[in-house]
Amino acid sequence: MIKAIVTILALGLPQGMSTADRVELDRQVTFLGVELPRETAPGQTLPVDLYFGAQGLAQDEWIFVHLESNEGENCRIVQDRPAPPAMDGIVHHHLDLPVPPDCRPARFELYTGVYSRTTMDRLKVLAPVSMDDRVHAGYLQLRSAAPDDSSRTITPSDMRWQSRLSLFLPWRHWVLGILAACLLTVVIVVLRRRAGAALPEPLSSTNGPRVLASTAIIVV
Image (tube, rainbow, N blue to C red):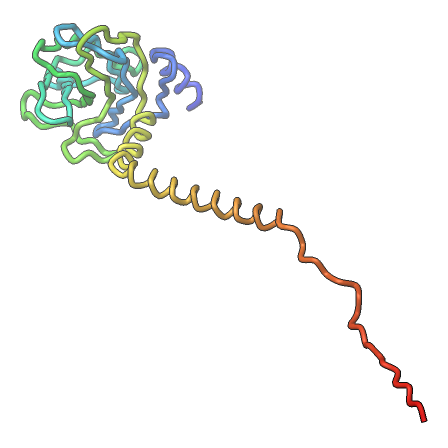
């Protein structure tokens, strides 16, 4: 029965998304993933499609989107809109984000969530926990020109992998240096062993010590 319900809900999702792969918010709301282009450029319009699992949100609950870069000072794009009605337990929220012409090329992170227009409180993100109750939904690259605007799907599990990878990136040069030193050590040891095995065996003699006997002839 549960499998059948999951299958029905999955019919309203893009390929690659699943109701089992989710971020859990309060009041049984879940975030299921996002569709957006791989790249964009200043002055263009960025189409974004967000997918939430919910039976519906209150009229005063809006979905917000923050697009920002962690690479120094850069532009920040913010937009919030009322949530559309749920269809078979899926809230499909489409929006077009205008990219300001003064944005500089960088990697941009996409955050989303739900907040109340009455209390201005955000719906709590429960798992994985978010300190600011924003879901890290996706990312894209901002190019100065000729961006790759092909669309892709990013799921919560994709972003968990990205989060683990981001922990490694600041240490990547140090780690790669250690690995290179270890590899060089192994190569030197192997070469030395091969060079030792190629040396000829020391010569050995089969002749034993010789005893010279002298015969003394005494003439009387």
